[in-house]
Image (cartoon, rainbow, N blue to C red):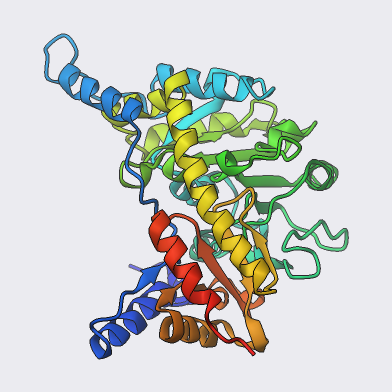
Length: 394
């Protein structure tokens, strides 16, 4: 017996455990201090009424002989796949229902999709980055190349014709930076992928936060993308499903490599290794795409974006450089006075009792930067910004 020794090449996931330890130590020393957390990427608003009603109805249905459901289709029930298809159609993207695969979240599928790709493929990943992209490929033993996302390019790296890769990860709006690609920038990536026979894995988990109608919410808004891109989306931040888990992945029929349909490969993988999302959850997810559901989740998203506006205005008043916050739930700021990410973490904790996420934890290019999120409560966000405004950064 041999273990998968690639796991031994993983770095310890110390970021959030270190944050928790530092906060705990501070609270032990100063138990009366009120700590406000603006670093976590979890939502705080409850599920909207339309979703709750749909789930409750589904529970009642499952309690009857006529309405009981046993094993469901691993790729998702038709009613939800159809709802997702119509959601895209309303934005001008035409999909076939069987190009939509219901999942338990974008994170899972971003890792699991690698099952259909050979281990010899080289992977191109931005830095700083959502750690799942990196760790899942390290687990598989693939070669990883990093592209520099930095202050100079607005944390939106563009194709380098001298770099050769087989699989590319893109995330827009980006986690952790909050930066968003425009149509011309995504077109450059699609053209690069088509020219080099590369697959783009496009993480659109935060697409619902894009308010600027000129910015693409799906890579399929770009001509040719169906021939080179797989799109991943999640209801976690869109509709507060972080505790109920549901998302979807789009694998177009036009996506063909070595005369093989990736759609068919993914279908085979899912029907073999995935049990599907519970019926009750899928009924709740279906409600997200109704007229009432869209109205209600829009109210929640606007609430979070107002928090982001409050944070952004405070940083602007303080003269602190940042990206994100406008069409994204994340604000990525440059640490003042050349502080390192962890120095700024400590400074905020001690002087404002506010917790964020050090950028260094997302990659070497994250050093000297810091992530704040808009998912907190309004009163906490206002209080946190008032405290930060009083800090002396000189």
